Image (cartoon, rainbow, N blue to C red; front, side, top):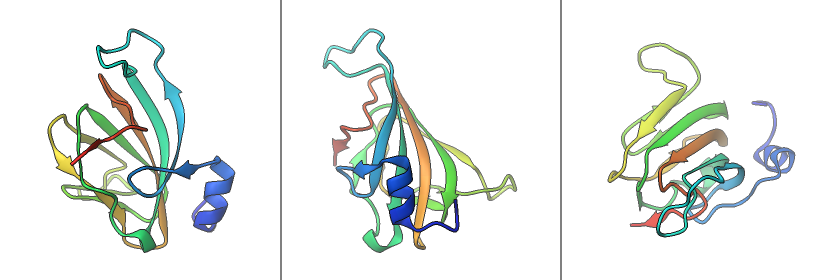
Length: 129
């Protein structure tokens, strides 16, 4: 997938604009018991950021998040970097925890990740900072 352009990946994965910049599609929504604010117990998305848009918007992580690297440029978060490989400095999966402030971006053309939020986590409706 790395030889594709961002536009090709967006079309192939049927991604739509995300409220915090980039593109996404929800691939899973837990239909279990909803929280008092009517949010799903967990959700999962594909997420693509283009280097030309810079970093996404600042937001507060209000649920545990698990990020997975899929293709393209490494994803930079304000506290970590997500990339292909398993060396000490190269992690294909990262965790964020409830209460952290963060934003993410890519340094080059584009990067694609997966993001799963649990317990109150609705990826399509981030808590603005």
